[in-house]
Length: 458
Image 1: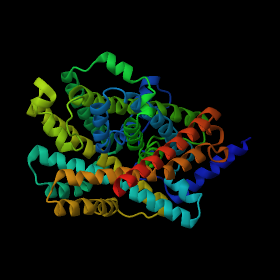
Image 2: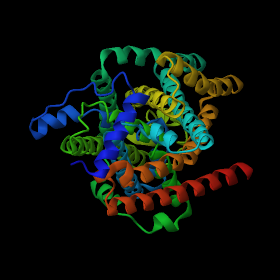
Image 3: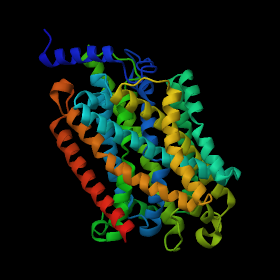
């Protein structure tokens, strides 16, 4: 005899089939072994996590992490560790939501809110995608200029055409997308691991940096930069994305055992890949500490970092044009990998909130053009001055901080609800930890926003 919760879940899944599946073209497209061993099953589930991890090491994070090392040496590594643990908690909940309900966060939010509230949340989510796009466009455009001397305006226009890349990849299958993104992430990881190895950092200093210290809170400048690291790490679009791409694996939702297995391996995948993001962000901060601490260098923009890596007066004997070029290659890889995940998240949000199914190329072209426009305007007004254009990054990160609670709060509410999740609802410790994290993130975001406004007014 079926339990009440099981009945609710069964009816819930039927509604999914009637409405349309999240990312229908790839939903349930990846086979998983029915009775495979641990490693074989884990390999089948490995992939979605790397797409999620990309959002935690996109170009918007780079300046903050490197500046943190340059100003305070290794002390803010503890903040990167805490941010990564928060990311692991939220993304595991996001994947579980999609696996159990068969719906993504956008679909559920639209379903369980009024028409007016749903419309408002859709607008905020779309603006968050645009804000994410701005960081990708700026990063990719500047990388193209640094690598190939392509004028910045032309580089920005080239990034607008990247919709064609994803359209091609979607035809090749979702596993191919995962493999390509994994390759781009490997490039980023190897570049920074190599540059950090050359910089000869203090191992004792690194290990000590992961232990939280009281001056992180008592030192106003350190606190502000710490909040920037946390605020720039957890991205709202990743929560929508995670709840959808966790459904790319085949699953029989009538069998609780299969659901539990999918949750287990999806969580392992997510945590492993976010650990890689943690390593990359740590490497960025370590690079800033080892090369730039005590040099009083201006490192507020990508071009500053590019130039500094080839300047022996700043980074010492290891300075070389190759280090600068490797930095630009990693920046381009980061921008392009983020582009792929941003495209998927945009489709999820549009289809989930307003149930508008338009061709992917049209949806992507509209959102990308809306994102490219302000960057192009800035590029023309400021005559392709990279430093001025990068100031847009600040505004985009501030908006992402504002948008974050509108994704986190529904996520925690839905995954803690027994009516929605049945036996897979958050356990008490997860539920309360998630609410504490949510409240902390909101407080930090409000503080960051207030500081930004005060800075602009002043």
